[in-house]
Image (cartoon, rainbow, N blue to C red; front, side, top):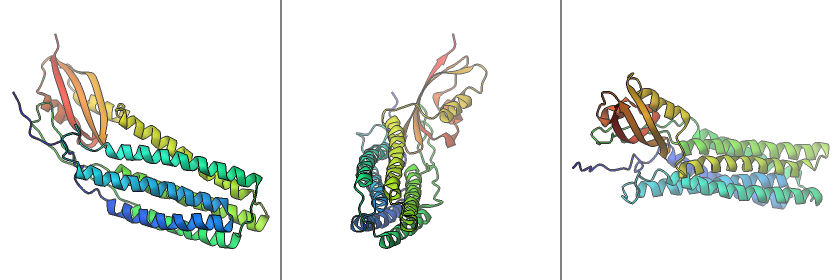
Length: 308
């Protein structure tokens, strides 16, 4: 009988690159969110209010992500989690996506109401606040830009003989970077709507941009729901990973990968359950070692069968 004493943390106990910068961005975003929402109500700008709510949605999502980082680290060695706590980040993203959907619906409802019941807009003050919001988003983009993770993982075959370590890319940080870019785009829409209203009398542009901002938030929430639900439901890994594993193992002419199950267990890392059929089969660990490390397969259980 073989007894395995290794852990299944897969690097989740480590502070991820850029995590502290994400906390800084959350603080900056939260402050600007309050300013923009308050200014939207005070100055009567729906576009400004939509931009503030957009920032609020991302602040909430990023806050959930920050908590997920903390929880994943704290429970990284908890044996109740079969493959570690990597999916906590996906669960946080799923919750954040639902929050985004709620914010989008609120923004659409309020914008439509403003179209039929327009209110006076203090364009000068609203423009100043929108410009400041855009500058803040620009600062957040700079803070989060160009952070590339390194691979970290724990590799072993079915017999758990071999171990490798690498640092996976922090997809949550990449997502945060894309969020602040979306915030910047929404700020540009708000500024455009306010300028159109101030200089061309196109007051309808303000609530219209509120709807556009809501659509942006809604589309992002749908995409995030799709991505995170796939991870939570153990959907098959991307085709690039599956094909990479198949190509690596089937290099020998008499070797076939007859059963393939590869699923995400954390940001950029995967577990695999494979069946290899060969005329002259190798040990499971040898097949695992053939899988390129850059594919992120950090845990594999490989059943080896001899061709009859």
